[in-house]
Every structure is written in structure tokens, then in C-alpha cells.
Length: 275
Image (tube, rainbow, N blue to C red; front, side):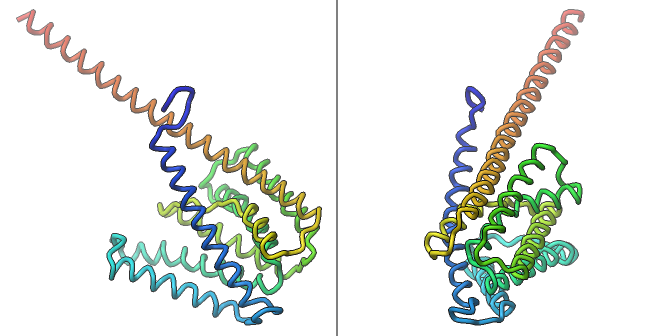
């Protein structure tokens, strides 16, 4: 830990690397989103079978993973028992597949930008489900932050020019399934950070696709974006506090070890003098 509670070089490198990966992921995700919208939209390609698109998606991911692990040996294979696979990987994969299916279905009814804004509820869903399953501790300030994100999304929904109740229900279901898979992954020690700032990506999609954006949309988007940004800031502060606690524990352990060595040396010298 540097002076003034600053992050160490190792943590800064990890943060920069993470943001680089996130930037690449957002670009690739944006490409897939636009492609899915083109395939499923009634006014474009008009392919009204979202589950088939989900099956193609999952088949491609499985094939690519097999090639990277088994053929090209880019990633080391993970040894896993049949019981662990059935109790952990299968439920997480099933929840993620359901999330993809519902999310792809929502493209038929909603604009891309509005779907992305609804995905800003992901931190809210993950935190709420985590508290429900006692994976996360309830904190009043965190819940207030979650409510601010929800309020922003609600305002954006109120001002949405292409609002469709069934489409919103599908997307909220997708968020719930994906949030549950995230919490389950952490519960099974496969934890990963999947709570991204969807609001900013939604605004970018708005500008590129020329979706209709009303003033109420912009206000709701902005409020939700600030809520997600504050959430990410809080997580960064928690990371700094965790690193400081770890360094303090290491220092205390090292100090205790040195004290024991000095006491041991003093005892040895005392024994030698008595002899």
C-alpha cells in the first residue's frame, strides 16, 4: 500500500487489465447485440425464433471452448468430478442459457438501447439475490444505491417511446436468471465479476442506431448511470480496504514472528548464562 492509502502497482495493473478486457468485451458484445437485433427484429430480417439463435450461440461457445482447451491447449483443463459438474456447472449453464433465451426474445419487442438500460438492473438483482441467499450482507447505503439505479431505470421506462410490457417482462426475467447464475457461481467458488455498466453502452447504442431518445429517457439513463458508477466506485474502495487489511495482517504476522524469535533468543541466552 502506498502513501495516503493509494493502491499498489500490482492492483493498479490488475485494474487496468480488467478495464482493457471490459472494453474489448463491450465492443464484441455490442457487435453481437446489433447482429441479434438485426436477425430478430420484425422490421429487419424477421427471424422470430430466439431459442434457435440461443442454441447456435451456446453451440459456438462450446465448440470454441473445446478447441481452446482440448485441441490448441491454450487453456489448462480443470479437473472436476462428475458430482461437482452436475451440481455446479450444469445449473449455472442452464440459468445462463435461460437468460440468453429470454434476452434474445426481448429483441423482438424492445429497442436495443432500452434493453441495455434494463440490464443496468444487474447489480440490483445480483445484490438482492445475494442478500436473499445470505451470500451478501445487507447494507443500508448499498440498498439505497440499488434503489437509485432502479429509479433511473423506471424513469427511463416511463419515457420509453417503444415500451412493450411483454418485452420488459422477458428482459427482467433474463436479468433475474443471469443474476442467479452469478450468485450461484460465487457460491460454488467459481466467482467472477459480471456487474458491468450497461447504461453507458446503452447510450452508445442509442447514438449509433439512432433509436428514439426522449428527455425523460436521458434523465433516467443519467440517474441509472450515476448509480452504477457509484456502485463501481464503492467496489473499488472496498478493494482498497481489503488490500490494506491484508497488508496489515501480513505486517502483524511478521511482527509476531520476529517477537517470538527475539523471545526465543532471549530464553536461549538466559539458559546459557544459568548453565
